[in-house]
Length: 169
Length: 169
DNA sequence: CGCAGCTGGTTACATCTGAAACTTTCTTCT
DNA sequence: AGAAGAAAGTTTCAGATGTAACCAGCTGCG
Image (tube, rainbow over the protein chains, first blue to last red):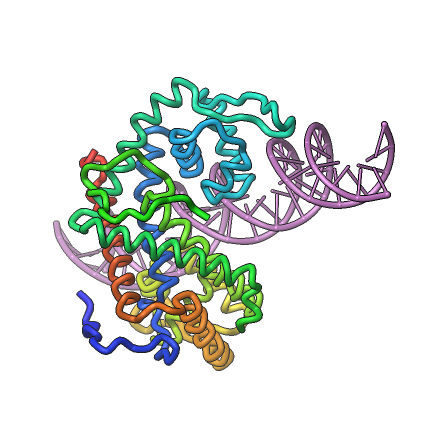
């Protein structure tokens, strides 16, 4: 599709040329993420009536129970309000159980109910299936490298963010 | 921080193991994109009072004027409503000019005003600067490969999406 | 020509989202 | 022990977002 020539001698990043939105990494990242999110979100809403935040909670609790809301925020990288609301939804549908936390009266121990576990057993393979479809025809080494990239980007962004990127101008 | 062992022999994708949110690509992608978006969005709001959609319009129009709203939707991969609102904001601030389109009475030819151009001249280098910071210490070849990846993912998602991913189970 | 249907753009509405304020419980310091 | 401050969770409010209805101008076919 693209007429972009294959660049052998890669352009140094510091000496960058004109801005082209189409080649701008944050843009590409955002667009790709959106497309993927949309796809999966729709699938989960259709099949299970789960929103993305709800889905994430289930995913985390399915592999590691029980957890407090706080812990869930950390694992899912979501706001506490978002987690709260997702939790509420799952509680109403009796997919989640909420038990008092002996160690701390402010928080609760959250885990999947039997029904929740059953749903998780369907949800997880489907998730993996989607991942496999998206990555069809990619060797696992490459994929692993990509994931590393994404982690690094996230960290770099976080670092810049609370270093107050203002400093860097 | 993480106790995750370094995996030398990567697990094949098809024979996938349990779902681990932390290694789940759509999740990683979403989280990385969010972190990066947040960082940049904040910067642009602080410095220029621009939202992300507004920023995107300026970026596109800065490299290619004039365009119709429709065309902008295509280039920015944004909803027409989103484009409309961004446009409105820029018009109010006189960063954008809107001229009748001789070829079609329904649409308009949008381009940057002189003020808009001037802002673009500040905006673009800053954008590139951020990109450079995020990618600090990465060689351009790798970066290029990453961008290819992101494009492929986006396409794959789009394909699955309108193939009605239901078919794929 | 003129009506049916389409397309660019706009508006209205319902939802989602996150920041900030608030409540309760825990922790620390004297 | 008691007061000050921090942390977990909840509620509230304002802003952003997207879907669907809507209007106006274009296109194509009888």
